[in-house]
Image (cartoon, rainbow, N blue to C red; front, side, top):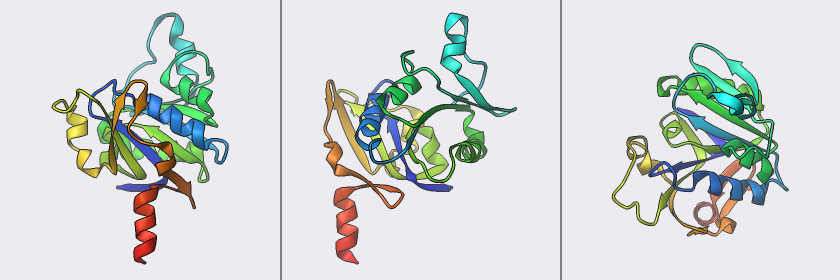
Length: 197
């Protein structure tokens, strides 16, 4: 298990449940105070799509080997999830594609690229099996009580908070989230810890 306190990880109970929207709102709120690296992790491996969007979608390939592909988004206007992160104010945005059995090595390579001093907003569910972030939020739609992707079922017990997304908003006030001393936290639990010590 890799511990990364400077990472806030956002997973979801089902595929399109608002992960990217929440990530962008967090980036927008905190980017004036910290350099944020936005990351999207996709649990697969292969070439970058096809057709006319290929080069725009892939951006700058930072790393490619037998197990993973890491690309850096270059165009904040192209509509992809990583482009939306850039447009929200991320310092850099990356797309990591790898198979789950290689998450640990791929994540270490990603950290080498980012450096040690960046705050990280990561969109992934399955990566929680390998990484312990400062904060793990799981998003679900209002009607998705009984639905749960297998990747989420394995890690939902680690969630610091389950957040309901009902467009246009979430049932969390972003003022409840804090970032200080290189760590993400929920202010209520952070305050309780300090009170208890």
